[in-house]
Structure formats: C-alpha cells, structure tokens
Image 1 (tube, rainbow over the protein chains, first blue to last red):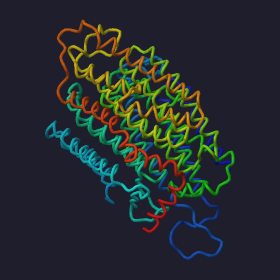
Image 2 (cartoon, rainbow over the protein chains, first blue to last red):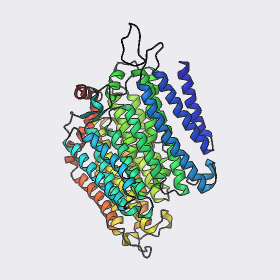
Image 3 (cartoon, rainbow over the protein chains, first blue to last red):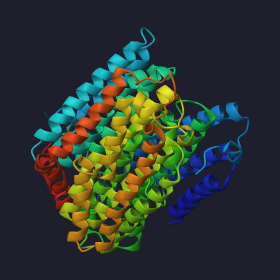
Length: 112
Length: 502
C-alpha cells in the first residue's frame, strides 16, 4: 500500500513538473518521472510475498508464483518511453535551434 | 478472411519499413510503395466492412494462445466500420499528398510516418487487448507528433511540442489506469476484463480508475475542456495530415476507444448508470457550444476548421451520452460524415495554401472561386455537409442524433444540436464569403493540379452518395456497428466463444 501511494506521488510530481515548469527540458524530465512511476506500479503488481519464480516446477501446497506478465509490460513501456523521450528531446533541440531558448513563454507564437 | 486483421497491420508496417530503404534509390518509389499499401488496406477494409457476418467477429489469436492468455485481435462490425472510415480518408489524403508534398523535402520520411500512423489507428480499432491498445495508441501518437512538426518552422515545432505534451499526459493517464485495472483483474484481455468487472464491487476506487481512463480518452478526442491542444496542432500539420488528424485520428483514439471501453468493457448503459451518460451529454453540449462560438472569431482558415472539429466531436459525444439506438446510429454516421466532410475541408485548405500560400482569411479579397472552381465547389458542398444540410450525408447523421435526443426526452440538447448546425453553417460560410465568393480574385492563380482536385471531388462524390444511399447504408453498415455497442457486455461472451478454443 505504501509503495502504491509512493508511485502515485511520483506520478503527481511528474505531472506537477509538466504543468508548472517553463523550461522544456524540465517538462521532458517530468514525463520520464511519470513513466517510471507507472512502471514502478506495474512491477509492484506482479509481486507476491514469498512467491516462487514463475518457472514450471513442482510446487508445495500453499506456495504461489509471482506474476511474470508485468515485467513484459514494463519492458514494452520502457521502450515506448524511450521513443517518447527521444522524440521530445529532439523537438526541444530543434526549437532551441530556431529560437535560442528553452523557455516555453518565449517560444509562444500560437494563440487563440 | 481469418488472416485479414494481421494483413491490415502487416501491409502498412512492411511498407513503412521498406520506404526509407527504397526512396534513396528513387524518390518516387516512396509514393508508389505507400500507394500500393494503402490501396491494399482500402480493399481489405471495404471487404471486411460489408462482408463480415454481424455477431461473428474475426478473432485472431497471436501465437495461437486462447483468448484470456495471449494477445487477440477481435474484429467485429464496429471495428470493421471504423477500419473503413480510416481507410477511405487515408487513401484520398494520400492521393492529395502526392502533389501537395512537393512543397516539402523528405517525402520518404513523410510516407513512413504516414503508414505508421495508419498502423497505429488500425491496431487501436482491431485489438482486443487493453495494453496492446495502448501500444498502438503510442505508435499512432508518436507518428502524429512528428507529422505535426513536419514543416520544422518555429510555429510547427511549438504546436508539435504542445500536442505532444497533452497527448503524452493522456497516454500516461491511460497507462496508469491500465496498471490499476491489471492489479485488480490480473488480465488485459478486454473480454476477460469485462467479465471481471461484472463481478466486481463498484467501489470509489473502481470509479476513480474509470474516470482516469475516460479523461485520457477525452484528451485524445479533444472534448471541451480538454481541447486546448487541437487548434494549435491540427492547423500546423501539412494539409493531408490535418485532414487525417481531424478526420479520423481523434475519432479512433478518442471516441472509438471511449465507446468500446464504455459500452463493451464496463458495460454501462443509460438505464444502469445515468450519471455517466449525463456527464457525456454535458461534455458534448459544452464542446458544441464553446467550440462553435470560438470558431466564429477565427481568422485563420485551418484554425477555424480545427475549432469546427471540436464542435463536431461534441455532436458524437452528445450522441454517445444519449445512448439509445437512434443516437448511436447517428454517432456512427457522424463519424463517417464528419471524417469525409472535415477531411475534404482541410484538403481544400491545402489546395488554397498550395496556390496562394496564405491562410489568413482577412488577407483574401474574395473571388478565388473564379480561378479555382473545383476547390471552391468542393469547399462549399463539404461545408454544407458538415453543417448538416440535405441531401448530404451530414444531414442524416445530425438528423439521427437529434431524433435520438427527442426520443429519449432530451428536448434542450436536441434544440441546441439543431441550432448549432446553423451556427456551423455560419462560420463555415465565413470562409466561403471571404475567400471564394466575389468578383475580384488574386491575379495569376490557377486551379490546383489534377490529383489534388481528384481527391477533393472524390470525397464530395462520397458525401453525396452517402446521402443518397443513406437508407441502404443504414442496415448494411451502421446498424450492425451500432448493435455491437447496444449489446454491451455480450461482446465478452462472443469473443470467448470464438477465441477460447485456441
């Protein structure tokens, strides 16, 4: 439960960074925080106290396997997160080359 | 026919892989490969949309793992209807793009991203697995961010960045909700989740996850108050991409995903949970009213159309909120008519930009209709359809939404929907008035190249044909798709019956 709350707090910290920070790099960091909070949550979901590794074997009564699927999901999510972060940073870099600033308020051109 | 769902992913994905290799050899190869892929996808989609037996979805099991275990594609009549909508607009936008993209460099990159976006949208529509849906959303999303910023001018990059921030916040909300759903149900298969939900207590936590998921989809669909990114993002993209984003993208990632989860997974109906549907109704009405009024004040050709898209999405959400048979048929018809209509309007904006190079309608002196008769004709007929004037397809879709509202006893929403159809016509005619009508034209402008005119006129023909044959389309295309939504959680039983055998 504590870990669940911790991952939610991490999620909100990321969201806070995205909403309030004017520096685009910090926004990108905020996204990484959000992604990792969700990955963290997935990793916890697969955890069972005192569980065996999920490999076919003879099991004593009362023992459980840990859930292997969240690990596959986290790997997929990490790869997607890599793509997102890489693309966002390259967008930021192109913007920096055009305008010479990382400040969101200074790049503001579109309104209405 | 069993293999069709996989082909609909594999063909564009293979094309997207081949284009960056081939176009170095000869530039035009990118267009040829993309064209072949899109023609194949269109043919398969048309076949599935009309010949798939209602109530017997195609369930493709990856790795032949039976239904709750592996990833499965479940293509029912709702999916195949959406596939058709996507395929038609993607195909005609491509035809338009052949000449339009002369403006830009890097056609190979453009068509790669274009096909990847199609892969993402097709995947979202066909998949029967929640996490898989998220993955396809990210494929479609990432390619669309890149396409919005494709021009790499400061404005386009800014729009791309804003769009990406909003889109990724939505994705993260959806992913968080998926993590919670997996924690609660230990499954990702939509049919299996639906079964688990039916047996679950409806605690506050359950509704928290529901709201998290729906907010994510609402941002993707750009429903008011989540719409702020759309008027920047859609106009900044090249015109064929604007047409796709406004025409199908927000409907597939937003409205379709929302409707599928709402009706088939959560299995809520107006009778059981009226609060959910009233919320949709109010959001829909807010979108219609606020976006229409904002559209009236726009001076930019494409920005006006973008606000109009938000308002038309409002009609679809309003219809989902009404939730009876008439309204759902209206919602699906509106998805079709708005995708063709708004796609067409964005293509005309591309045609004008291609020849004149200007989007600010206050700088036009009118009279462009003399020099660009086909663009002007397409724009005016498309505007009539989007506004909902007979005899076009748009008339019937709005008619069915209003009929559904009246039938369910929602007189005020019905009146607002009818009234704002007129407002829609008002702001769309603003462009007609400023750009196309009048005596004095801009000197030295001629009609756009043949392929661009061909794409626009084809969409006009489809809109007219859709209106003329609406009462044939309704039983053959719209009714089976609406039935999928109306049957609710029976979706789970059908998928299990077909897919559990392995």
